[in-house]
Length: 164
Image (cartoon, rainbow, N blue to C red; front, top):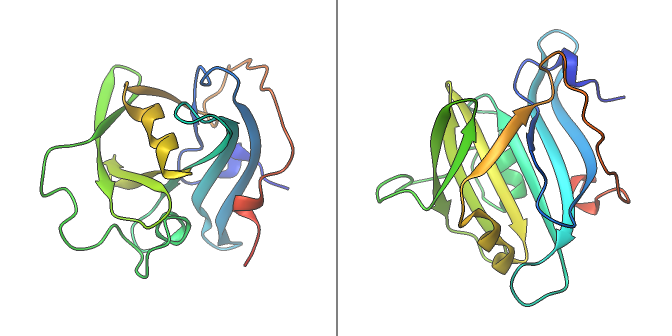
């Protein structure tokens, strides 16, 4: 069972959720000795462009883990060569701080990555047109933080987090 409070990295949730979106799963990567070194939150909702369904996975991870890169369809464990060489394409915020996100090349999905407190922050969206959700800055909450009384709307389990 996934327990956000035991994670060694943030469990980022866009909050408030985009209109019509639901939480569809949680995943983590780690072991008994080191704990969770990567956490993913899956969401599903309407695609803002073109209609139809869309999926989003938000990942926080230590460098070198590679969960975000795997979800992005990349061969390595990080965003790759040329990352952050141009201006950022999106912004995420937590508390009173904004964090730039850069677009990462991917074939069939929109991928944005950045760094927050020495950890990778990934947004992976299917189809690629769902990346329009990040045109406006997206606010994040860390589900590990105490005192949160969120009534999360849940949907069917995301196939994006299933093992290959």
